[in-house]
Image (cartoon, rainbow, N blue to C red; front, top):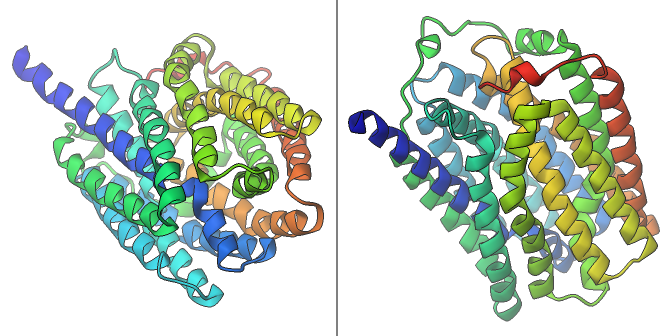
Length: 400
């Protein structure tokens, strides 16, 4: 038995460290990248256009990454390629000062990085299938732990040095996480052999996803929520800056969300097993809507810290529920492709529209009213899930 348990433990610790460093490393840069663009003289509309270009590239690339992973002998190798390529583009972006060159590099970065999230999640599901006592949330929580520890350090370093440190820290984290994946090598299931993987087109996979009413409702809800929340996620750091918070406080606010995610990921695992992913996702949307209402009533730094704390719980519910629901409802042997459609392709479609619109809204009304838009979107997303999953018992689908 020790010979069987040892590889399982190695895979678990390898994927945990990957999430810790890959997601945590984003804390060096992601909360501050809008400040970088703003300090290069870009308007809110131009920042929104960069988001659109990023989304177009990711829209094209994500399904290709997913199909490559579903057909490859090793998901790990495909993911390592995506991580190293993304690290190189992050460093290239740090050297850009002209909008046109920024747009080009951001687009290439999206092509490289579109596969990282769905491939990481699919690899984590492969690992946890070999360790039935460990759910996806117990792995994903290590990303939250890494973010909580690194985002505060990132804010402190950026405030005392320059934003270049944030770019360098993130790129190095991506490269290190690619090396750590050498520890992860879950045994492939017979269904993933080259002969067993169906040679269906990406559009056939999409049509298969749309035949499930629960997946249709999930797609509608996520599109509404992402469209209404895109501006808030992009410009909240600027709003905090306008309220007098420096980079250290901006980093600390993001760490607040991640600290809450540490216990919430485990709680989300238990709730998904007991209730199913649909109700858990609905609860997360309601909680996040209430927190955005608090900032509308009290537009101050402490209120944003409270919102971030609630967002940590909401994000935990979302992370576990969506991955479990999509991966178990997907057409046979197409889990990575399905996750790529939901995690990247749909999100990119919304960013194509939402980037310019939210940039215009920021320029016209300021960041405060983006909280109202986000609140309304969460309510509409909750209604979409409520109606489409009202008679949809998904508790039987948590076994992945």
